[in-house]
Amino acid sequence: MDIAHALMAAAWAGAVLGPVVAWWAWSRLGPQRPRVRLTGLVLFASLYVLGVWAFLIEPETLVVRHVRIESPAWRGPPLRIGVLSDTHVGAPHMSARRLGQVVARLTQEDPDLVVFLGDYVGGRERAGARSAAERQEIADGIAALSGARARLGRYAILGNHDWWYDGKGVETALWKAGAPVLDNYAQRIARPEGAFWVAGLADYASPRSQPSAAQALAAVPAAEPVILLSHWPDAWPQVPARVALTLAGHSHCGQVNLPILGRLIAASPGAGRWPCGRYDEAGRILYVTGGLGVSILPVRFRAPPEIVIVSLRGRP
Image (tube, rainbow, N blue to C red; front, side, top):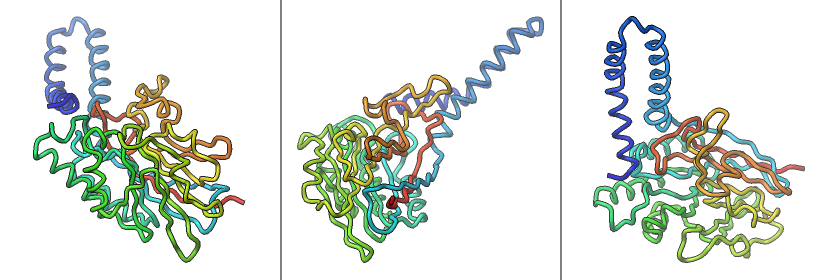
């Protein structure tokens, strides 16, 4: 059992036994100490509710976030992009069955294009160190992505967890699911309203290549608009202004976003600088999704799992 599943077991034990322990402590303090009893009760109740919400409830929720982006580098009619990232199947809160339900919800939004931004695998262990049941669950999760329907297709990139597990195996499974993997590569998408390109960056954890916007965009004519996919927001500084929109994941929006203290977890320097949402710098636009799953800690607080529907249009 890894640390994430061990913490989940502890969370469930705390949820069940917590009220019993509180009742025992309440009875032991006695009525002669009312202030101590009341203070203890309020403190315990607050921690109990927050813990149950963060460990057991919020990670099981789903937000469908609609984002409208106007880009000066986009030409042609508006495009609706469905974005899924960081599914982490096999980690707590994300089974292949639940991911299938998420994919069905995404399809209900009727996007023109669907993109998957990496980290389909939960945990850090290599495939050879996993049980047959774990490997099958992960395979079923990737296969569930084939249920995403979009008239212009679906495209994918890999994340660090995928390479730690079995990058080439995950890549093969994505192709079988009908999601070509764009590894420092761009694909032209023809449509009656005007062609555009989808390009993808390699992952920093890849033993095959490092993310290179120059390589990914090499075949893209300057006159045609392009959308760039990057698992890590860290690669955004190398993206030129000719890119209409860069989409990234990896950050999980910090997973824990505390009032005043803010996000305590940064998966990388870029995730700390651009944790989630829209960012504009030097005429370039980045959107970072908080993704769906959990990593290391099976917790989300004020950073709910999300599907993002981006409506991309040109700006005069």
